[in-house]
Length: 124
Image (cartoon, rainbow, N blue to C red; front, side, top):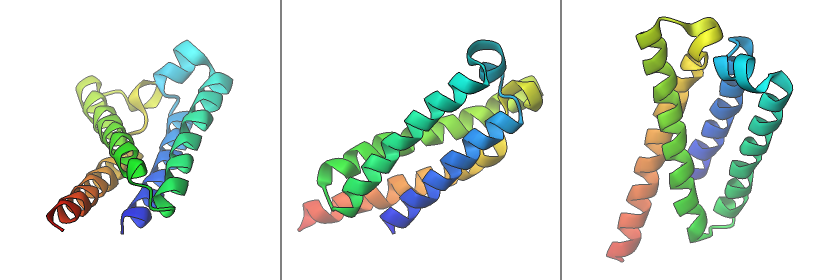
């Protein structure tokens, strides 16, 4: 279940970047430009692919790093939605809220399942 949730979060992450491009996320427009935004996010998307490889191999450290990734994605998704509600600005503002909901839900579920896995391991 953990690997399935992790893959689902990777899909939401990629969709999230595409949504930010589609909605002209303000950082892309005013700070980085489209090319650098895509390059940086492409690199950042490769990091969890490496984590996934080690999760599939069953390496314990990968679960710990996956916790960090899931937590970051939960905060990211939550922030997009809260800031969109506060500012009332989605397009050319805080685009990313639609997929942000998926990041929050899968991230929280992933954190719960990893937490349960480590609790069960400690009890054995």
